[in-house]
Every structure is written in C-alpha cells, then in structure tokens.
Length: 166
Image (cartoon, rainbow, N blue to C red; front, top):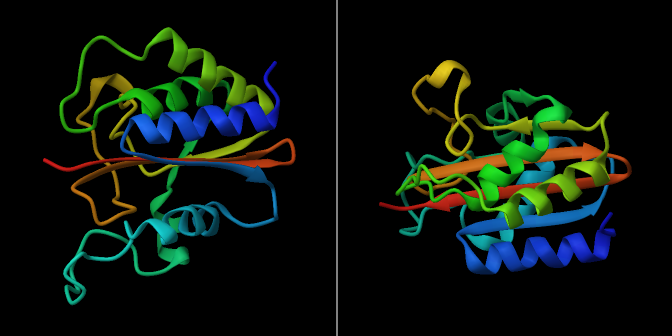
C-alpha cells in the first residue's frame, strides 16, 4: 500500500497533467464543503474571471458548496469514482475508461481513507449515473463542467475536482 506522502505526490502529478485540483491532507474535522472550498479558493475557480458577474455557476459560500456535494458515494465505490474523476475529460468524453494507472492510484487512495470513509460528490459529471441516466451535477466552480469528489476517513481528507471548458 502506498503511504500518504506518495499518494499526495501522485495526486499532484495527476493535477499537473490534467485539469484538476487534488489535495490530500489530515482530517481536521472540517465538513466536505469547507474542505472543498479551501482546496478551490487559492485557484480562482470559485470566482468569475470578470470580477463583477453575480450569476456564475459556482457557490458563494462553503455552506452552499457543501449542499452541492449531495451525492453520497459508498466507500466500496470510491475507487471507481476517483479513477473516473482523475482520468475523465469532462468535455470530450472517451469510451475507453480510466487507465490501469488511474485505477491503481484511486484504489490506493480509497484504501488509505478506509471502508468507513464518508465520500460526497456533486453529481455525475465524471462517473456514470445509475442506469445510464443523463450526466448531471451541481457546479462547485465557475467552470462550464466540474466533477468534485471529497472523502473523509482514516484520519485523512481528500478533495479531487476536475474541471473543463468547452
């Protein structure tokens, strides 16, 4: 099993190679929305580029962001959700599926948080919806497309947010 430092490095590499924000750290007792807000705030993805729009798609507060993370992901499915979020191009979807590397990294990260971890997502932008339903989500950034997955467990917290513009 990979250690937290190695997994943090893997997430940093995935973020560098893709349109992602990916953070692994200690569980500091924060809720999913606050964790996601703190990961996204330094990136500028929460605020409109023009600086004066009031109706952009992103949340205005960490509480609103928490409410948008409404999909509870069973811990047993977290690795699949992580692999899809790490790998998936949200604009130009590919039928190929996540690489074996993405699957292995996601499995190690899900294992670190453990079988009792509490995972939340903002919808099905990256991971297929049940029964093949239309992909839908509640935006957590100002980007056209985003997929957020936040997990807390085993003394750790992870935030992975993929974004895309068309």
